[in-house]
Length: 363
Length: 101
Length: 170
Image 1 (spheres, rainbow over the protein chains, first blue to last red):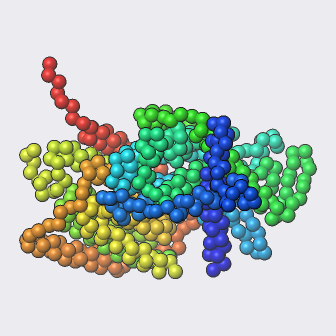
Image 2: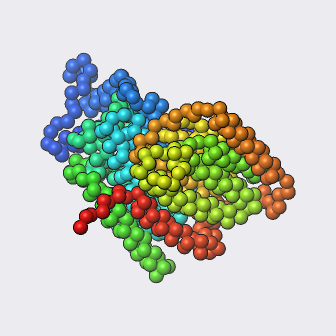
Image 3: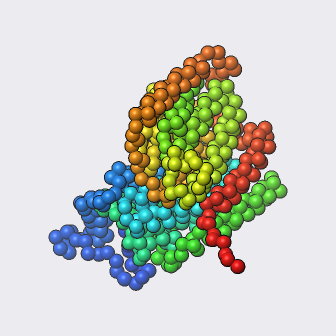
């Protein structure tokens, strides 16, 4: 019974973290894009004039969801009502559920119970994440089909074809990391990145698999349909692509799935390539610096440091994805397909081959 | 064990029978195809249940192969349906019954 | 508690499977089949086959059914017309009766002597390592044959589904 309660609390915490991170990323995207494009950005949301209720960016964070919640919910004429209703759920659900397998800390010992800071410790953690990503295609396909509109259908078909193409490259890029660490369990991979080379350089996954990280990041950005791969929602061509005919909370659900998916890609890249929650030189009892200095820390401080480190790394990767979005122009559709099948797939296979050879030689 | 093997085998039998009825009753060849996939999954379920009953993993490896062959079969079967749709403009099994084009 | 969960899942799976077979709209049938496959993956987890469960979601529910949906949308299939005719109705009733008989018969055939049954599975059962160990040692020849089969299927699908080229007049 207590186990179920603890699992429920962990799941709730992870869900809240993802949702809040998505909301913050929405604001970071607007202000960050304004900075890059040399303009001010959204600063018009106020309550009763400028002072004393002008809290700066928090106004926009509150105003956006209120606007989306209170919009009228329209279903286009001739659209299939059930499918139109289900598509946003199918888009959001797999992306949020993926976080059940991602570890955000080492372990917390309270009394005689050891709480593993991961919602579900699965033996096949990486495969579970890939499985949920492959279910995210249905939201796009149905959103496009059920809207009875040609822009939506075009966006839906492009989006789903792109997603299933880059799933393959994503999966193959992860195999190199799996071969290096020898396990599919994400918490075990996170724990295996704790030691240091020469006592100084942390043994994070990116040192073992730089090409794998690059392929995974590109495939992940393509999978979440962000620029430069955002033809499915090609704003200047297809209005809003597959979610053209959605308004109000359903449109909010699609946008949430967009940001949540970039958080998922960042979370997975952090876990496999940047040491997950590992802080350099931090072990379960405190800091072990290379010179021999040892700083003992209570267990709760260690756990908080690990969670903060995980959040910072995920946030940094999300900001990187936002920077990429506002820097690069959009790919043409045949270039998108070429990149996925003709370049990333053979590169990922070559990466797998080289990793295998090195593992056999080095032992 | 969590689930008695016999219960899982009963579920497998029911799903297989539903698949058979689907092949017999429906006229749309794509729905017939989907009923065939349902039958394949029922068989997968019985393989997994019996593998768990015996405690041996090779039942699961057979499921792996069944899934792979089902994927290949779905790809080729749907390609055939598309090709025949181009000529006949119908997916009704009754109207596709004659070989003459 | 696992047994109660299994009963709930079994009922939902049967309802979803009946929707596949009964619903006139092929898109809804395909979605019902996706639901059935996902529920079966959960049943696989209950039967301690985690690797196969995840593979079921990735391969079956995540790829094969997307292919089905693509084809249905490409051909722009609408709901099937309801069937008329007394003879048809009689044949359909016979088919359903036969199906029910088949289900009962199969369920009864699986009763009886259970040889070699163990009550707890060996450690590591159903995980990636156990399945891979068996796959690459005992079943390596079927594995290689299956990869050739997939290659043949890919070539075949591409050839069958490409647009017909009109023969050029020389």
